[in-house]
Length: 396
Image (cartoon, rainbow, N blue to C red; front, side, top):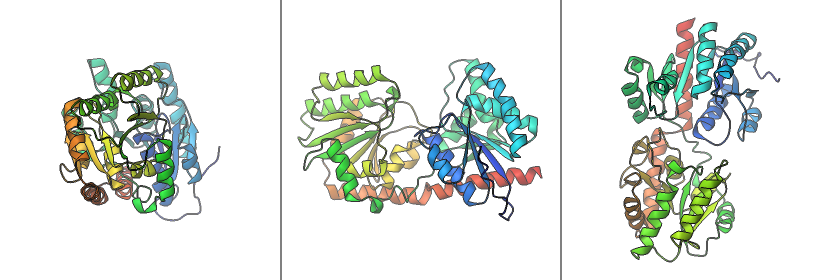
């Protein structure tokens, strides 16, 4: 195991080590945030450890000086959770870890018990809503509200935590998810990258592209999106030269992908709608689109797609719930439509498709300005590290 601590570095943060815990390091919001915070820690002279089973982003973590501790941090098996308490406690002792930050429920239970045993600060981040259908599930979810500081990634998330766990309200701090405006920068995307994706998506000359990105999971609203396209087609409001692209990982949900294929066939959308695989170059994907849609049927704590698309200068249509209400400026940077409502989405699409490109570009510019003011990765990292320093100062 490689030790990336910086013993020669001076300053108040030298030799401090933070352990973040996340089930995997694939392409989700919690995973991206984990790596962003690790990068910021390393830049400021801390040692950054991540306990996880690994994934796509593991190479970036290592390349920037962080360290992956491979561990089954996803299992909800009680025996595994309890066994991980001992593993985390040993890791805290051996690596002189100063603070533990958990980003998912099952490993958070192990991390909480280990942190309390070793008398070090424990931080959690609410990356999702963690719905509770019964008292047992509510208790299981409560671990995410048990941090010495509980980070909410939007104002909407903070209200959700305070409503469900009022006794923990004083520990809640709002630190919105940050967008990397260097990566998500229209000026940094070469036209060749955009052209390559549009060719892969079989986009014809002069076609407008509507992009719905995100993993292929039912609650992302793909079926609502296809139903909305069908409604446009039946009402003669769907222009001839439109390409609708659903881009995302199936992650083993083959029956759902088959259901989407059947819907495309049933709605006679072949030649208009297409499902493509996971896109690595998301900055180019947003630029390859003219309109970006987020059709989530359930509220997202933050929702990465609308602010990322806005950062890339794209007009957005998104469902009016969750953290999206904070990142999309209604009528200015995009449109907020009713959740789970194909008619509302169809009307929003018709509205956007009727606008000249110059107007869509103005909406995209307004969106990027909004993200640059409020949702940068630098702001998120600075505020998170300030939380760490405050907790460590209180402990010393």
